[in-house]
Image (cartoon, rainbow, N blue to C red; front, side, top):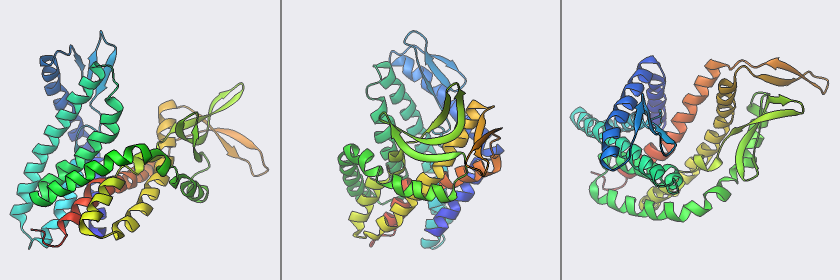
Length: 332
C-alpha cells in the first residue's frame, strides 16, 4: 500500500508539471473535438470553443476539464501496475500490455462520459448530478478494475459495488457529516489562519474563510467543499472488503478519507482566493482584533496540498480496491 501511495504521488507530481499539463490539455481538446460530431449525430446542436462544448440556443455548456482528460485515471492505472508487476514475477510484458489496454479504455470512457453528460444537460439536466457524482465515479473504478482483475472476480465485485453504491446514495451526506467535527478539530491545529471551519449553511456545505468578500457590512467568503465527495469510495471499498472478508480495509480507509477532507479545506480556500484575486484577508493582531492584508496564495504549499489530495482520493477510489482484489486468495 505504501508503494502504491508513493507511485501515485510521483505520478501526480509529473501530471501537475508542465509536461503533464500540456498532455492533459491536448487530450481534453481531442475529446472535445471527437465528442462534438457524436453529439450532433444524436441531435444536439453545439459550438466548440477549445475544450468547451456550448449549446447556444439551449444556454448550457460542457467543459472538458482536467477531471475529464483522464490523466488522473492514467496515473492510478500506472501506479497499480507498477505495484503489481513484481508480484507477477516481474512480468514487464504483462504490465505493458495492461497499460496499453488501459490507456485506450480510459479515453473511450472519458469520451462516453462527456457525451452522456452533455446529453443529460440537453434533456433538462435532471440526471446530470446523479451521473456526475455517483454513476461515473463508480464506473471509473470498473474501468481500472476491468484491466487488472480476473473477469470472474470482477463480475462479483462490480455487482456488489453497484448495489452498495445505490444503498449508499441517500446516506452519503449524513454519514459523511460525521467526519466534519473530527476534520474541524484537526484544522484548528494545522490549518492557516485564513482557513475556517467546515459547515453547512442553508443546505450547502462549505469551509469558512477569513477572506474579505465585502466591507459594508463586513462579509467573508465561504469556499465550496462537499464532505461526501471524500467518502465516495466507501461503498467500493466495502465491496472489496466483503468479497475478501477483510474488514481491516476500512480501518485503513476511514482515516485516509478524513485526511483527504482536511487537506481539501485549505486547497478550496486557496482556489477561491486565486479566483477572486486580489483579495484581502483578516489576520489576528495578537490583541484580540484583526487587521486586513492582501492575501497572496502560497503556490508551493498549494501545489503540495493538491498533490496530497489527489494521491489520497485516487488511492481510495481506484487503487486500494483493485490491489486488494488482485491480492485476494486465488488471484491469477
